[in-house]
Image (cartoon, rainbow, N blue to C red; front, top):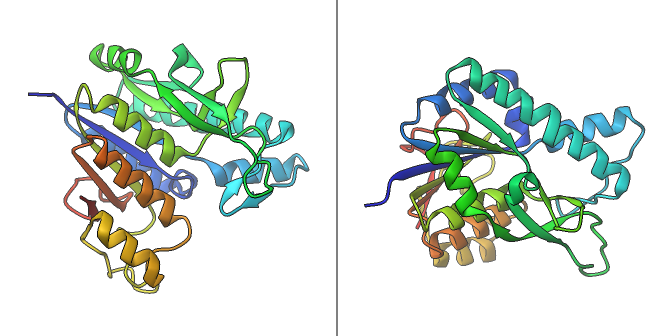
Length: 257
């Protein structure tokens, strides 16, 4: 029987909210067994870029990452946000280790090609996750805290979507562990009515997803989040839950099957 592993992905909105972040890290520390934390930090990157006079450009919720913006996201994601989370986890008894995808070749990506005339710049699409290396750290009692940065093997850091990193890491480690993947954000789960925070859809299958997208119930940034979740399930991840950052007990939110 495989040992249980919980992978929690927390978004930039939670990282920016002091109370939500403190609660999430406390709850994360209480999760029994092996665990991994993947974080975003886009809102903080936008603020730092603005303070430096660098304009943030977005296309369909994705950040255009030129060389100037790459320097910002590397500093913010791999430095400020990552090390702040690591320090706070250490303070509550979690032996955390902050990582980017470049560290021990954890996640290698290729630069995203031009799509529909849009050059995303230094944005990475994942090719490979170093499951053996990550499992060695996990078995040594360490808790990886992964920033949304990867590398291309040619000396370039690449800005990479945190949801994708969480999903690809879960898929890779599912060979070795019984993996539960949790996407945490500011809502209680996937909502059937965006104006009603209590309209949580309890279970979503691939067929449900197709129908909800066609009906406009699921839209925007929730589409790639659910796509990542469904692909993870189809690749052997035991359970995927989309829930509120203050509810990572696995008993609430939307379960993907």
